Amino acid sequence: MKLRTLPESKTYGPPGMCIYCRTPEPDPPRYTREHIVAYGLRGNLVFRRAVCQTCRDKTHEIEEFCLQETFRVPRIVAGWRSRHSPEPTTVRTGRPTPGMASEGVEWTDTPIEDAPLAYGSLTFARPGILFGRAPHEGFHVRPGRPLAHKPYPEEWKKAGTTIIATVKPALWCRMIAKIADAAAVAELGFGAFEPCLPAIILGDDKNIGHLVGRARQSRVKVPSAPYHIELFIETGYVIARVHVFPDLGFNAMEAIVGTPSPAFNVRALHAPKQILRARPVKLPLI
Ligand SMILES: [Zn+2]
Image (cartoon, rainbow, N blue to C red; front, side, top):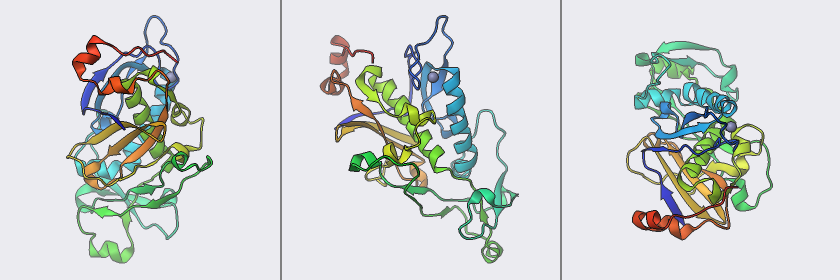
């Protein structure tokens, strides 16, 4: 059952506690605002005074890596810039040996205009919990279709030179978990569900593939946008479908946000806005 589709742009909050560790905001207020989707991914969903400093440091580390490494080339292709980092002018290129992790490859900086701007996505398994699998560390994942925005030069092909990007599945999924949890709290409130993603976001739970993975119908065509986020209830869980780079061939992802609280009034969420205002849903804080 579908609950919400998030708008592309909205300001929420403040929620009164940190949306990740659930610590109440001290007085005087000192929590900082949170971009539900990173600004570097064109995120324009802002949660005011929503994150404590400890959680900010952890989520910043995840986003910094994903934006600068994993999604560096897609961001260049999309023409998206960072607020703080200088505009990229080069990409990393090198010759990976078969089977070798890209992390260990020697690379050189190549000007963007000389590179084919190729990138690949990862195809994750669906979240294990939905299929009754036991929690486990590690990922069932295979490389997605490589995509290039210019043909590879002949000499590159001969030499086996490619674009180098470091992809860490755990950080990729933790970024999706972060977006999912923040979006669900923003739209549904703390009381609506018993959360299960914070430990994954903050790095305390390593069974990431149990709760985060590829979405069902992950290739569904969506209207052109920087991202799409949907919240729904299925098989007894509140789930977020998070699609970043839908125009660039990436799969939609899914994260199990939590279990609905008994007091969670699903019907009220579907009511027209004026009825919601007249009869606000009261949800207990958990
Ligand atoms: Zn926190």
